[in-house]
Length: 483
Image (cartoon, rainbow, N blue to C red; front, top):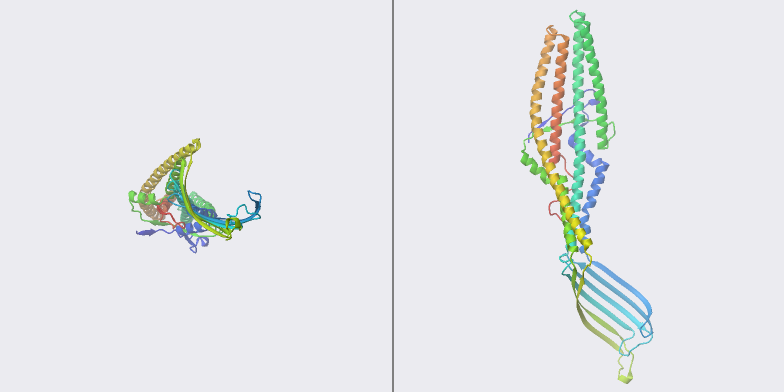
């Protein structure tokens, strides 16, 4: 795209030199990097990105173990020493259900054995694998998937919230930056007008000495000079205030000097193109979409909570028992070594039914209402976005036409003033008329500069909305991105 660079390098005095030109993009980058508010928002966005890890960790393996040693009394009253070690692994599955692995070892020694057919001391071990299959509540692991969608929505909302805060601060900086640029432009015009008024005063004084002009003309021209000097001082104060405010946003020294450089690019985009571009990246609309997805995830979770619990649990494993038997000659039992291993299994059904479901019903209705609210907010934001973009698009087109017209006006007023200077020297117009010409030229200068600055500001805001003004340092999550 062809670019027209309008740079206001205002050389009003050494303090307004060209040593430190500040473009809008440079200023915005400093705000983004140095602002404490943006640093805080960036950390919040980074924190929101960790929600995915929290949700995915719910499918991780869990290890539990118990080591115990105790002294107890058996059911026949015999003192017993017992030591045991048990360990287990469990993992929820994304498709629903849970798998568990378990193992254990126990050593037991009683002072008196209650039967010669039971080893004492004894060593027992076991190993099991079981699977829980939900047929009601928890089927398909709705809780995990809704939590994952909720985490993704929180991550997206945090990221887009940061980008929204970035856009808000950038909008504030753009408005202040262009206001300061207009003040610098007005300073240049005030200085030019002051120089013209001083030259005119010199002509009036010269003509008064020649008897061509009256004392009243000299006083009128002198008053004009003093008016321009007072205006220049007032504008210098305004610039100092605006410079301090901009430096504060950029976290620079309050009196650090710089020269605004306002860039105006040609604008030839269609409204449909602009709307499509902004609709795809507008952080406020995108955040509202994420909140709709989050509310939808809550509905799925609350709907699952309304179901009854019906689980089928199947397990299989083995048991091993070994030790020493008490010799029993009466029963021809002389071998004291004992070892036995058996395979075991089980199948069970668990059912739970809530007698009072008013709580879960209320949570489900609240989730539906939250979804409706989020959807209405999204619709309102999309409508506002389209209205604001359309309005700004038309303003830019009209602003471009106005700049062309004001440029023509300025050229005409400048030619009129120059012609007035020659006519004044020939005595064909009086001082009052020439002062009026100078006022007309100054008004045309200010109006043209105002329209140029407003056009630059509108184009900058449009570029901000389209995401081309400055790069975002927090990645915008893609639709469906789970990482």
